[in-house]
Image (cartoon, rainbow, N blue to C red; front, side, top):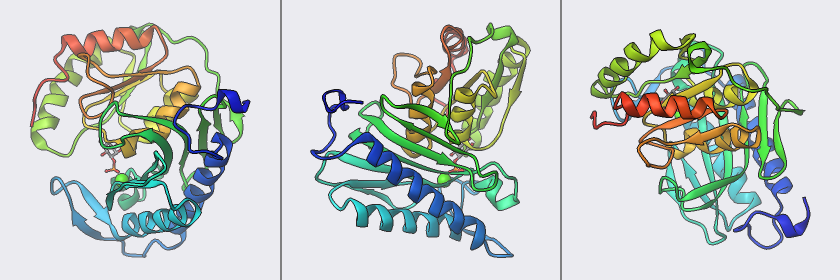
Length: 285
Ligand code: IPD
Ligand code: CA
């Protein structure tokens, strides 16, 4: 990529490749931490939005490490993490991090969780107000690492991601996830009950960042979920879009809390149409 084609909003002297190198380095370091320092009797340190929305001491330790490393490397950038919130910066660039995406899997020893690190321009606190320019989703249990830079493509362990055309909806394998509020889950299960007979099958992996990366990798054909936050989405969204996957919202609302739909065109249009018709974005909490 030439200097002329750098994404708008990057601070002077900053390159996408440099941001990507930093994102991957700190995500891998946090991955080593959560694998090697995991206590033998890992417990729930606290709960957040509901009794099932858990935080372990390793979520907190991983975020502390990410924040320390990113602040040391780029002190003028903002930081926005799931566990410790948002600290604005002055450079126009913010690091959006999920220290463990898939915490329930981590707690149970299921090997589908990831450290997600993204550099975004814009306001990371507003859905649709930010744009990722570099991102890394690293699963320390499997060792798999997805990376993407704006204009540089998307990669899994260094291999460029280029999946073929998607199937029709009736033949599509669709991943989804559920929120932590029982009211929202009741609404999500009603949408799922209607959608399930209309697709090949459904997967619930339990790690939103990996779900979106798996669409980019062709391991599932599409994904949708209501209730995501910037930290679940930022890095994986860039992996998806750089691999030719469309990431959309529904009902004219930007992709994030209201709804995230990811699939290659034209499958994404069929999935959006179904979810809108089923009222999947209706108030539910
Ligand atoms: C959760 C996971 C899960 C998704 C939830 C997310 P967390 O993130 O990504 O798959 O269904 O919406 O909140 O709490 O493990 O970081
Ligand atoms: Ca998390």
